[in-house]
Amino acid sequence: MILVVCSLLFESCGVYSFSGTTLSPDIKTVTINNFTLQTAGGPANLPLTLTERLKEYYQRYTNLKVIPTGGDMALEGTVTGYDLIAVAPTANDQAGLNRLQITIQVRFTNTKDDTKSFDQSFSFYKDFPQNQTLSQNEGQLVPAILDQLVLDVFNKTAADW
Image 1 (cartoon, helix red, strand yellow):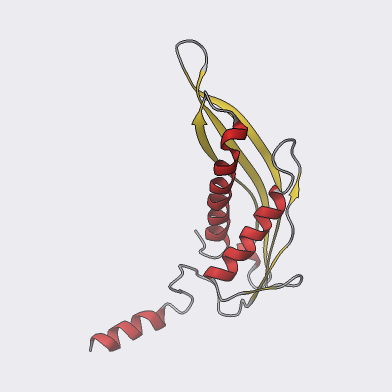
Image 2 (image 1 turned 180 degrees about the vertical axis):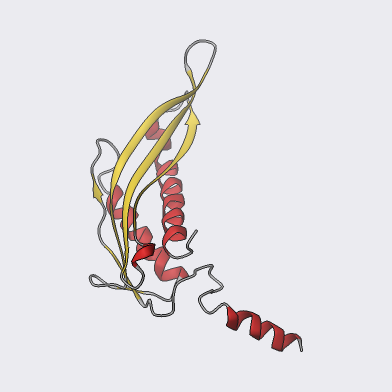
């Protein structure tokens, strides 16, 4: 009896998967074009690193095939911000923390359902102590920020969040 109820439950949710995606079964491929850099500052390889992380994430957490062109879904975008911001002012008019914020503009096309297509900005940041430099922290901050941006883009495109 429990087996029948469980199978009915999962069959009724035809587009749900255990990875959390809500992709339609007719979507089989995704194209992720190389991101570009349209901001001063930041590592020169930042757009390429972001592109590769997106490709890896889609390959790992969906059954979609990543193809160079003509995918059922397509992602492209630009890195539009790489900003170092002083935050948490102290009594001495100095920053208590520094913040590295990365902003990307993503254009997503769903050829099977155009209502899911979008052109949207995503941003995330990490803070570090004011007595440390960006170069001391960049190697830890950038990967963590990119991980969150990839997750946000994935959730918006594949998990419909």
